[in-house]
Length: 381
Length: 82
Image 1 (cartoon, each protein chain N blue to C red):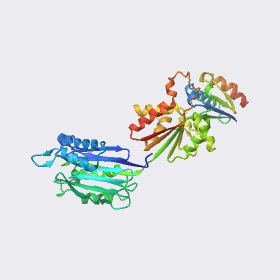
Image 2: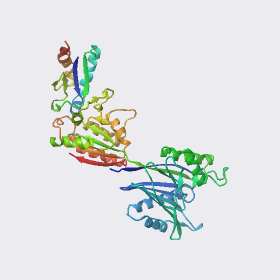
Image 3: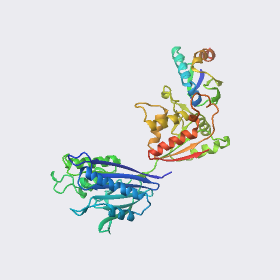
Image 4: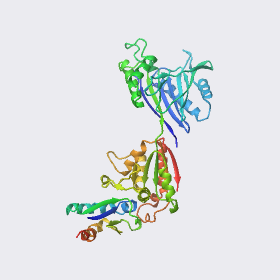
């Protein structure tokens, strides 16, 4: 399981009178890093948006080809069209790659600086070196993030916020740095920082932005993982090992299964207390047990959780499956410890037999969590 | 005090265990027996093959579907109380 995660949030606004933003962002994840590409297309509206989107898509695509950052930048520069009239590129870009180790590499072309935010410290600008690639100046930087540090990126529309609206030179990079150091000394949530910066920029523009604006905040933090234990092992002799393995895991502990929860309760000499408030739902209730975060019934609850992930959960509904999802949706990685014993009573129930194949149900659920960007691991007993 | 455990685990739930539990709860309320019958749900009473299961004072009874719940209540739970 990953030990670190990167949360990315962004806010955008379009130039006054335009429906579509001329800046584009694309976030992609590789097994060992998070890649953020931001681009500002020349001009505004649809044309700018197409150019910026093309740039971020191209850059992101190049990363899948295992090219080095330099090769990617070279390819981008060589590929991006140049405005013949103004002799400038049709779009600018910032590529930020945050490795799970905290190491960050940045390549920027004609883009505003980025800020390094650390709780309790004044935000700092990142030192960069200039390099000329195909007659274009690229700024490169390498630095390290500690857990809970963040990186703040913004486009021209933020730097020049207020031009023509009372701020002759616009907000400027120094102004943004000052603002962030005063408003976020303790580094609140990423969303808040991005929201505040975008709102303030809009304020300088008197809500009539003269350019498209984008703010993006990426926070590096320790990953939160969960382990879900379900089903007794196929070989009863493995019960002790399975329970020991489960209790040795770090992070959230969730048990899905009646028999499994009783085995664990015996192992821990703990009491299992079903939650009365869940009795009136059409799923078996959740239960509480010291030493674990949540206990639910197994196969029906897991199947229902999978269904909710696929089709959306009914509004205002609270049952064991919604509670299970509440517990899992906030984590970065889930290890499923799956016991493969079959319960002979799960036959001739009038329901399809496939429902009772724990393995199938869990694999489907894991796939759905992967689609939500979570890392999953399956271990069978 | 009579202890009644009603299983609502996978097998019992599918075969009506939760409804059986509800019938017991209604009867306890109707007859004002809350102080005399300790009713609790359980996620497995280890007798899945005969689901839905009810354990009264440590004795397991299988096949207590909702339609049999009322008669079971009077026969096995109330009688114990008396």
